[in-house]
Image 1 (cartoon, rainbow, N blue to C red):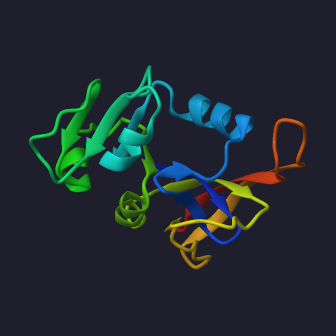
Image 2 (tube, rainbow, N blue to C red):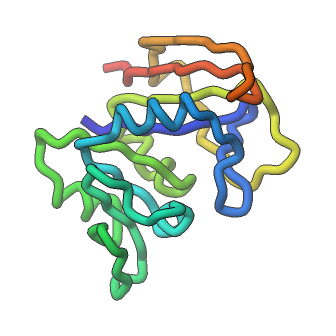
Length: 163
């Protein structure tokens, strides 16, 4: 199963200057719960944005056209197709960014795991592709208000690909 996991603003914004726009503790907790013990695939810039490098208790795969690069705690492949060829059929794979990798994975993904933040940020330079209802059906939705730990209201929305 290939899942895309992402936190987006109402306008599809996901990042600014290679950083996440939102830091929501419950989103981070959900991300950790869903991806731990599984394979995560990301672009080079996303890997470089991780504060402590490779994420623990996961198989980390980095995509980079610079095939001579090495990333501590991670495997490196030149393309998403090549990375997927090195995964087994029973592996749960999570695509964690950035925008180019999301776009490449969109036609291959079985589900989308979206945290939708009820906000439109002032600054954003990276956006998630639109979710077309002709291809995706909502399979779960939990909404949460802003609170002392979360600056904005948000929802966890899961989508399954229509077959």
